[in-house]
Image (cartoon, rainbow, N blue to C red; front, side, top):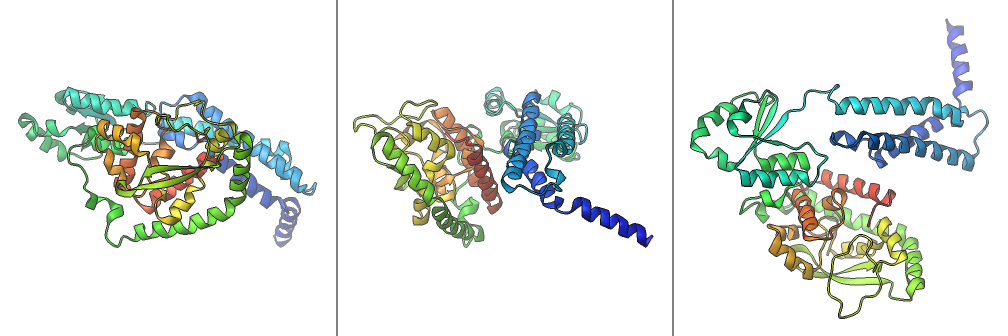
Amino acid sequence: MVFWLVAVGSFWSQSFNGQLPWAVITTTAYLLFGWLFGTYTVLGWPRLPRWRLVQRLGLSLFASLMLVAILRWVLNPSLDIWLVYRSTQLVWLIPTTIWSLFLRVALRRGALQSEEPKLILVAPEEEALKALQAWRVTPTRTMPIWLPFEQAASQPSPLVLAVSSTMRKHGQYLTFFKELEQRDPRECNLTTPLALAERQLERIPPTLLPEPWLSYSEIPWNALFSPQRQLKRVADVMLSLLLLALTAPLVIFATILIWLEDRGPVFYVQERSGWLGQPFKVWKLRTMRVSLAHEPVSWTLPGDQRITRVGSWLRRTRLDELPQLVNVLMGDMSLIGPRPERPELELELEASIPHYRKRHWMRPGLSGWAQVCAHYASSVEDSELKLSYDLYYLKNFSTWLDLLILFRTIKTILKVAGR
């Protein structure tokens, strides 16, 4: 027995000596590329086309193989390290990818988890249309079904009844509502359209909000002696100093390219609205041609001709935002928060979108929940969508949410997905 154990140990040490670091590298690469290309997030989007899931898994596989091949070429490991061979990589990565596809399809079909409850909306027509419109903006999410109360309550369990406040006050339904509230919440969960939207969409559509809603004293960030607020400021200062030191060569290189392209100024200074609407000067690397003094303020549109060639690259990598780290150090901004907007555009937005001023209740940020969840705002409608994410962040601010936004921002930068 002892001889057998010694023989197995000798074979193991000879066969797997030096293989472990490459096994860790390959596994880590596959998991990180899966995160980068969104193979985990698709589980929350049941209506996402299946071909896109296959595409993302395929990209993760290809990127992992390429990374290992590049590292093998750079590091030139011993010929005894058989784990870096392409044939060996394919032997275990392809089955892993197929298994990942099978598992994700099964989860999306509900085969490996409990039955998803039906989302039923019970509200007057005007309120129902507003709520359904909030779901249509993100069409890959499961939409609730609008049904009359009698029909909604008779639906088989499990179900979630999102009942508007108007219906709850209706005299003929009061007794029935009390009976529903006494049922097992796992079978019949009573909520409101607003609460359902906040939970399912991870945003708070301003059109569904009552007046008044959420006072300044109620937001988590404003809590007196809040440890999370103090930690946020300390993190802002420490990380800003670190990022400024690490990215200084990139900023210098970018300023040279900006100047060489059109011999114009390399920095762009603009007035923005800050905490509680106080104006401040924001610094960015210039990404557009120098505008004339009489040009009116306008939205930045997809394919905007004012964006320079260097500016397009800076926007995609978000390097144009790096000078704002100085604004963070000065206390005008935070690393995470609602993006500051130009006062000239805000006059129109405040007149068109309810609760817009509430986004000023926290310091503006370099990145935010709206930036990692929604596309670039180029219209009033886009700004309303982004405001819904800002309101969600305002109401649910926490250190953990800031960390989630930070990781999603890193993901956006790595994918060169800015605009």
